[in-house]
Length: 267
Length: 266
Image 1 (cartoon, rainbow over the protein chains, first blue to last red):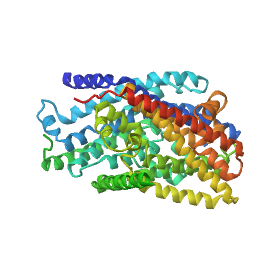
Image 2: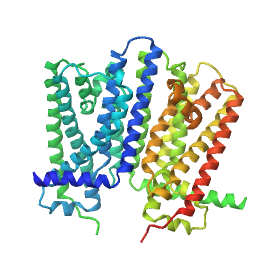
Image 3: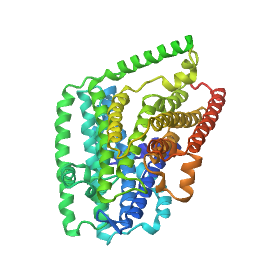
Image 4: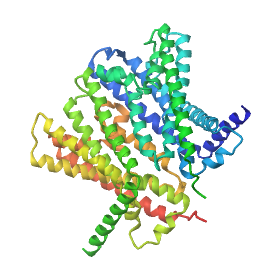
């Protein structure tokens, strides 16, 4: 466990080396979500009604800013394919002989990245939250807040395994960037980062809910806003746990198959 | 004339090498292409989902918003195919690593090489469906447009590209002082998204910013308005003047940056 937290701490130190650039990148993400919020304020003004698609303006603004915050540390870290790079570059050989389980090593690094981006994103979001404070809603109760935070944790684990699995394809493919890019594009919309999924036509909404992506943003924000009754939340989170189990099994299967044919490259 | 022919030959060579590099990993090429087309399709779905609930965004109808959206992405893809990554990301990397030294020795205009060294053919492949989408939107428009309106539209598209080139060049030139500017480039990328929505959604200060200080309105909205026949000739002239001013400023920054460049390689 000590080694685990050392790895997390090292990631923080690595990220701090280029903190200005990183902060500007996170700020760019915040700006993008502010633009979407402004768009929605205009849509509500134009619609001339209190509710659009079952959301009031404060609910929509809270949803979008919350989605933006989760986005800043979940989706951004999807761009750091360490397992994939290790396999392609031959660094996996070094990782395999370290006195630490490689999967736990990658998980610790991912946790460090997510934690760093979360802190950075949150620092940036404080200004935005102040800007839109009149339109922000608190959750209906502490239960909703705690469960939505828990569901963000589930989302982080689902996202980690999903992108690790895509990274493991490097055992068979020379370049997995394209596949990860396509997955990230789908994830951003289907997770509900730019619009609640209930806005989509019924058939698409139901189709999206069959995928793991809505667990990442749509579910935590619906729990936060009280759009899901508290007694139904464990059932929804259970789906997340089932996805994690499935993804872990798939990950393990791919790892066992892939490591057998791994050829160390690089010098 | 001879110089133009020479540079056209260089462009064709850059396209060839770009194709060879990017087709080296075919599944990568195909999945990147699919990802980019899916992204456009999902954003279109986003607008459809919004218009299932409302009739207009500002004073813009569904068809008009689609025109704005398609125009924005045509310009965005043209930028991505050519200079965007070259200037915004690869140039700061080369300045940071010192690889820029080798470029300085080549018998070719440095700004040309820095802007077009890598032609993004994956983006070109994704650009074609977007162009098709623009054609579809134009065929959907409830009203017709004249040849003159189409000509002004095309001129304003070229102007938008020139404006973006100047903006990206100005940001990239800062890397000669900071040795990093990808953060600023990412902020610019986020801000750029403003261009695909009607500017009317902004009020007060921000509206003035996007109209006069960082006139993102000229990327897609002004060309779209020209095609819809609601843009004044005066606005076209002001747009050209703004682009000219920014381009002059960016070139000054670029030249000052080159003088400032200190090789960082070993």
